[in-house]
Length: 320
Figure 1 (cartoon, helix red, strand yellow):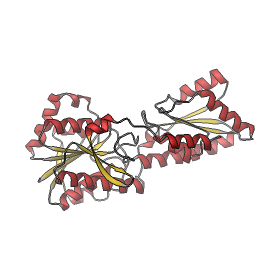
Figure 2: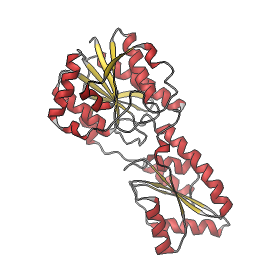
Figure 3: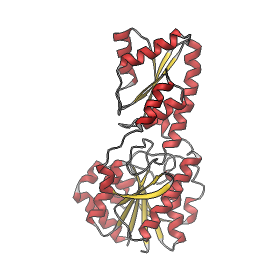
Figure 4: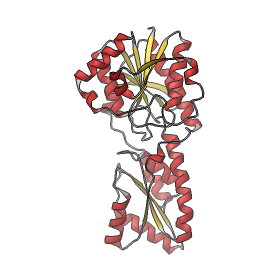
């Protein structure tokens, strides 16, 4: 193998730049040429590809987002579109591809690995932490700390005005961010899609807190359950409880990556190149019990992601 390429796809996540840096530097260390594909799969079919040198990835390990940019391309599901992508890679003599992203990005990488001689490896980059085959995804830790910081600030206002606040967090259909942020932020209730809870229990906890003299409550809501305004409406119409809403939105994706995400991204990016050099393809890298692992794309999709329900049960006991 003499040439490889790297792209980022889907939603950006803090630590993607660190992963790109690791791929580029590991490749060059091992005598490979490495190319950056700008704009994800869209950039690939448009031929927006440039060779990267060591200096091109200097001073990016501390930057959020992705300097290769990202884009969603639903049309990539079309085999004819993928043929264009394959042609672009073959024209440059690229033999290996590292795809940094989430579930949709992996599906594109799997399709390419099944249809061409170019080897592909996936690196999990998503704040949702919803990729099977790894304990943590790149960006999750940074997003978690962003949410906790917001909860701490909102609690000051909630306490000062004796109010209940609903804080809606990202995660798509995964409750990892809501669960861990809710525990770390000392919230009274945590609502996640994997373990739906009756709203009456949320109201009961608010009332119990009031009964012991607490004048404010924090409810952390995963977006996969419902929106914060929807929950506030139910609480008001059914239980006559007022609640203020805060939707954190895309602020959760940005910011300087945490030390944890920088190290994780560096290890996974390095490992992805090592797998390509070993002739592997159609696999996703990850970390389990602090050990680097790789999983076939097919197995990643077969398994269903779920939160640690033991942690969820512990959160219920902590929020009495």
